[in-house]
Length: 445
Image (cartoon, rainbow, N blue to C red; front, side, top):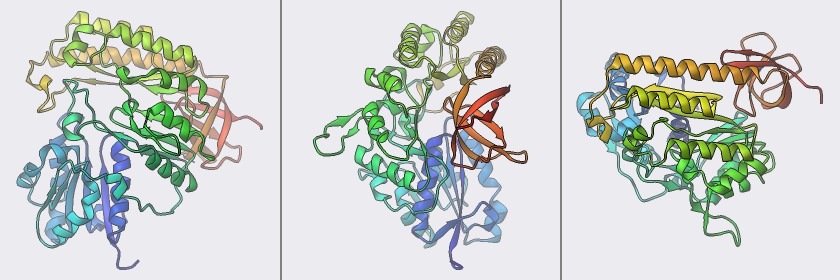
């Protein structure tokens, strides 16, 4: 391996980008590359970008600027940009930053070795198409190296919802689901390499509608049907999924939360606003009451489920009354965890053409919302004290003898002592709550 080339990948954004980066590293492994965590030691640098956060493209250009001296000192260094900013910006990236050798969108990363070979030949390489071939089928080769106890597995990509604030339909394309057999094969491979928990990923994962698997089980499978098939895999102890849309929370998926033991009691279900007027302006196609009634049905199926969500405040046209409707929804739902953001325009989306509200007003609303969400999170965490939960341990903690894992409800849990190793799934009694984690002691078997 002395003559192996080295690949440095920096990943931005969502879990799907983490999964994509792993697949890109595997694809480049077939071209003779091995991973490195140092850009100054790499033969190729790849930025896997995200377009969701504010000024995402400018941050990518800033990051690329840091490699200017490195590229000047090593002209044979190849620099690439992948992901959603690559899809959105395309040729503009190469025009603005000449040190970039290749640009590849999220639907074409299986072509990365071909693009790298083209760049090695001295040509600029660009691929932001939406190819007809299945990129996942093209990436069947996955080494047999051991994995950590948890893994992401993309089962669905793209979105047909066209929320007014979101770039996903433009950067990831229309909704597409992987065949169930392909997903099951990948899950078995992961379990064979030490994975005990899999999180199914999709921009709109509960819209999954993949080709069914097995004799007499053809047709189209829903996400619930896929989860039930995954639950039959020996050695796979936990299943999660993210991110979901309320309008695709089907009856069979709600039922699965109640009767599928391996499906964890945690659900990330974004609502974005509690105001029907704002939801309509966002093109969400549901009302606040529809969302609340849906949460009630989910909790009836699984009373101990922890609900997580997303909120955008300061959306164009949002009034004080609209914001208070959001606060009222939060008080009614009671979230165990949440992500909240001040609205920022994404070029090319309908909302970007609308007048922004006063940024100071938006900032004040965000602070008030986050204070309420933090209070709810801490109340729910404190209520866990004295309870027993399952914890899948992932790594050593910062203190001597300390191990850290995730509970059934996705809380970070710290335990000291007990002879615990990474990959162990243990019962733990919670003894204390910190701002973003829990502490506990192992329960004797």
